[in-house]
Length: 112
Length: 115
Image (cartoon, rainbow over all chains, first blue to last red; front, side):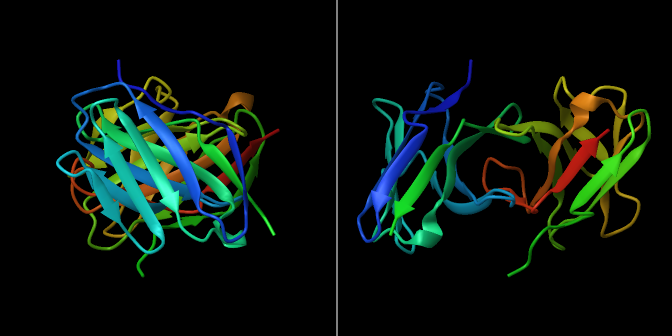
């Protein structure tokens, strides 16, 4: 079945360093992935997405890498800032593309 | 930037009472969704809504739940007779097209507390 999971529940990073958050997926037919950021008391906030015809996509300070061979995604945050502290979810559409399935999330803690 | 807005931010209700959670999706979006997140757990899909009808729903979305788009801007989730286990954050989301091509955008949620 489809599932989206994360390797680490918590990641602590020094302010200014780069962060890498990893995600595995199981459905080799998955063709679209989304990263969300959820700050305490708020809803999931869209960060960046990637389609399966791409290996890499860059945004502002964020890069998503997709390795279809091993069914692995990563989100890289450059020069991590205290405002990046949040739970990060990788997610993918499932069913009839009418819902998004979320993983358990990685909590990013930025150490000042 | 346009955003999804939800009201109220916090709702406290006695068990057995009806509750209506309200959402205003992004104005040009055509697909609407409800999710919930029990404290410390994953965000779970409840229901999707398109063209004035439910397009998909999860096992959680039983007969106690209903959704409605009463006018051109609001999207509501009603729980007819609340149970203690309905306590959770409820998130509304919307997307311009089906989620295979565009991400869903989420509101900041309503915290529902059932006493």
